[in-house]
Length: 342
Ligand code: WQD
Image (tube, rainbow, N blue to C red; front, side, top):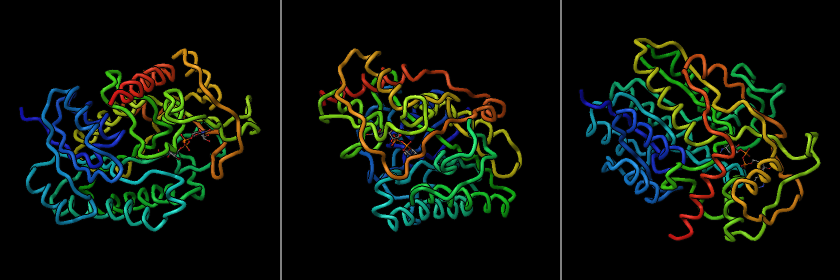
């Protein structure tokens, strides 16, 4: 039986690339789109090394309707779409809000238009726990309300989910699952794929590994005086391989559902809260490297404490995280060391 084709927008990015590997492993045929605005060909090469496949790839921008329509027509018949392509830096979104709204909203709106015109009805959307803001109660389940977004980036995720909810209500053929990631970390166990931050990393783990590798002078932990056991923020750090596996479970579910079951959304986390300082100490423990770090001032906009209640994804997707934070830190370090030799 021919492999089911799945369009993966942003497939050269961190989460997209790891998901493409899992799609191949599950017998799907991914069709990748990326405009390399926040990525480059490195991860595409990594996917080819891991899978042994020559990729089906189109360079272009999802917000470009002509381009997108051309891909759908050339690759007919697509069974579904996974939409990762978006800007995702909290800090950058504060400096360039209009660019974030234009890019993140236009690419989703264009995608929805082309999907409808081309009669493709299954969509997995890359969302984030950032839609909840600072949760009133933790662990966070899917009923938690959307607080006012802390950044334009977070606002684009909230708006995209609203767009999807309204689109599903209006179109009885359209089926959508949004996946709300907590904090993705780590790299593929083969060290052929990983995070490739452009310029200075915003996120914690690439900053840790670059400091350990001597690329950065020192890690600053943003704030040590929060109302948490060790004074540092708490997050739900989930291995990228677990996150990728969840996407396959989600598309499996959509493709067997014969009708629109309404807008569906799931938290993807381990269900464990780990503090920034705990993660730093775990990194030192699993890698044996010395890490130059200090506790500095708080970062504006940071949520103090959040971690997932992953029960809904477990019950309805048959998914739960398998890897530990130590696995993720070990894999992140192996990837960093491999990259050093690039
Ligand atoms: C985690 C913790 C920082 C860097 C955001 C988005 C989310 C997702 C991941 C995009 C915080 C602390 C960080 C550093 C530090 N989307 N930190 N020193 O802010 O939880 O989530 O990025 O990728 O949607 O909201 O992730 O990794 O930036 O920060 O102390 O050099 O690490 O203060 O407590 P965050 P993060």
